[in-house]
Length: 189
Image (cartoon, rainbow, N blue to C red; front, top):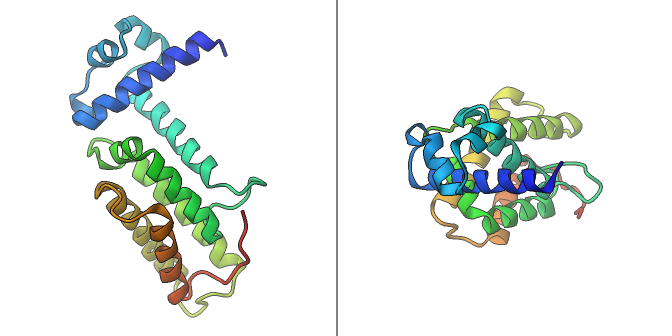
């Protein structure tokens, strides 16, 4: 793709994130986005159908960046090791403004829902390949764990990261081990 197009899209998305950090999604207009990005409304419409399309693209971009930061070096697993969990929290810590905005803005539950679904899928895989908690209903366990993880992550981000990334990740890992959810897997990078 042409570098000018990528640069323009980056500026528009940056302006959109700034506005989302200041006001609710439904109160943002294409004109405000264009003004903040210092482009014309037509330029915004050239790249995005409307503000909902821009939001969808923004969520896709930032979720992909988060997901890629969590992957192991060989491109596998999302929540299968403490080191991956630490890497995830460190990435969120480094990009707190963006992810706080995507999690806190009441007009955009899609980011939280996407995160919840990915965590549910990964936990389901983990439970399937291990022998943990065979005496419990899998769906109950999945919903409980995914809600706890997303809730903790939201609290941590919304409270302006009151605990360093490495510490919160290690504490979460320890909690999951204590309730015998995480198998004792060898550390991966």
